[in-house]
Image 1 (cartoon, rainbow over the protein chains, first blue to last red):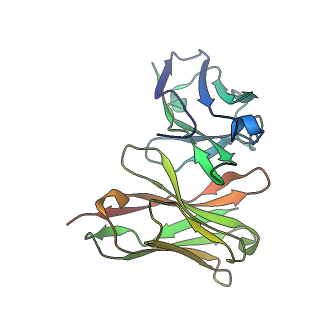
Image 2 (cartoon, rainbow over the protein chains, first blue to last red):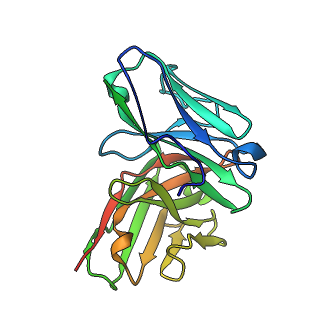
Length: 111
Length: 119
């Protein structure tokens, strides 16, 4: 059971907008630790997609955006493309565990 | 550009040992904390071990404590993971990842090396 909770799967048609939630607690997201998102394309290593809850590394399209409120964070993907089909993970830091923590991952299917 | 290259994976019998290496390039290796993160088949990400920039602080996840040891050689820009008393549940792809402070994200990952523990 992951410290951060994500839906196992989401789906959307090309061109649509989808969101992936990441729910934590008062010792991680709610304690103002940043949330980071990773994209893992099939058969590849994870790649940093969003850092510090909102920011995109260079090269990441602005179709990807992050938000945070209270003990939750969200990743939004607009203008869905087939190449977005991947697993997405959120990550933060937990002060009670003194460890980094990951969400269980969400599989995005582009219909 | 930043590059992390893992090696040392393979098939090993339960109870045996294996040492993974991660060679880094493209950045000042001695300035960064490094992690090993693993992913069991069809499962999510799990951090395994972490080592501070100078090697003075090391921590392992409870699932591998007492069996796995992380180390680094800053003169060789390499981080290692010594895995002893391997179990079937240690079967996974092992990634090394650079830890970015102060935001505490993993900004670069290697391509991973597969460890299979099987009789």
